[in-house]
Image (cartoon, rainbow, N blue to C red; front, side, top):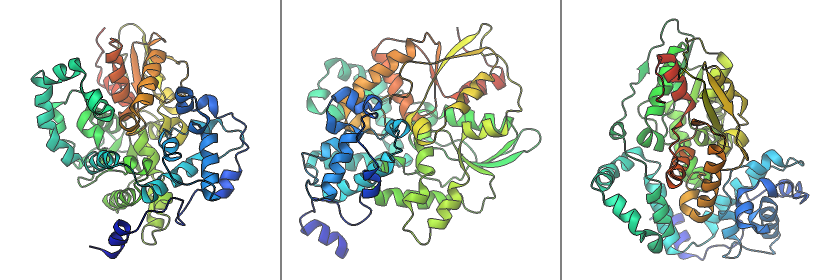
Length: 448
C-alpha cells in the first residue's frame, strides 16, 4: 500500500476545506447576496430552501472557509443538490464566478467528508463503469436480455425498485433501448472529405453517447465530410473526464484529461470537435484541471485552443453541402439549450443558425429555455427526486410549443427528455442537430 493511501485510511478525515485550492475568498466576496440567482436556479425552484441556492451555498462556503461551519451532514447535502448548470453565472449582475466556486468545493467534499457506505458504493459503481465504454459494453448484453425478455416491463410495472433504492430505480428508468451498433465502435480512424478538403479535424466520440446513441456520431462524421472536412478519430481515445470533473473526482478527471490530450497529439489538426455539450465544457476546462501539472499545463492550453463544439465550428466555417427539406410541408422544431452549452460555453446562436439553414425548418422557443432538464451528468441518479420534477417541467415546456421535433445536443439531455416524454405518453422524436443536418444533406425525409 502506498504511504499516502495508508494515511487516508487510518487518520480521521478533516471536516473543513484543506489547503489544496479551496473556494477562493475573493470570488466569494464578489457575491452581494442580491438574489437575482434564485429565480434561475433549478434546485432552489424545486426545493425552495435558501441553502439550496447559489447565494446560500456561497454563504456556506464562506462559513467553512472562516471555520464557522464544517463539511458535515448539515452542509454537504446543499452542495450535492447543485446541478452545476451554471444558470446563475449567466444571470448574476455582479459577475460572480460560481462555476469556479462549486468546482473547487466538490473535490474538497470528496477528500474531506465521509459519505455513508451506500453513497460510497453507488459513486464507486458510477465512476468505475460509466466513463469506460468497454466496461459498459460488458453490461449491455445482460441489459439487452433484460429488455427483450419483457423483464424490464415487469420490473417497472411492479415499482419495487424505488422502495429498495431511488437511485437504482432512477438508473434503471433512464435505460434506453440498446442499439445493435452499441457493441463495437464502427467509425474508422480516418474519413476523407467529400470533394475539396477544407479542414482536417479530430473528433471525440464520447462514452455514453457512442453506446446508447451512436447514430449521432455517424451523422456528425457524414455532415463534416460532406462539408469538406477530413475527420480523424483516434481509436485509443477514452473518456473526456466530464462525469468525474462535475462530481469532484479530481484525480480521475486529471487522468482522463492527460489521456485525451495524448490521444490527439501530433495529428496536425485544425480543430478538435465534440458533439456533446457536457463533454465540450469539460474539454475547454483542461487548462484549469491540469493547472498544477508541470508536464501537461501548457499542452492542455494548446489542446483547449483547438476544442470546439461541432455546431460552433460549422457555424463559423459555413456549410457548403446542398440541403433539402426534411418534409414536404414546413417542419416545426424546438431547440433545447443544454446547460453546459448555453451557460458553460455561451453557445446559443450557432445551433439555431444551422437549423435555420435546413429548408422548411421553423424554430420555436420554449418557456424557461434556460432552465436545466435535470440530467446534469449523473445528477438524475444521485438526486433523483429533484431531477424528476425538472424533467417533467422541461418536457412540458418543450412540447407546449407544438414542435414536431425536439433538437438536443447533449446525450444526458437526450436520455432525460426521452424518459419523460415516455412517462407523459408523448411521441415526439428527440434528434441531435447533426442528425437533422445529415438527413437534409442526404435528402432523407422524416416520417409524418
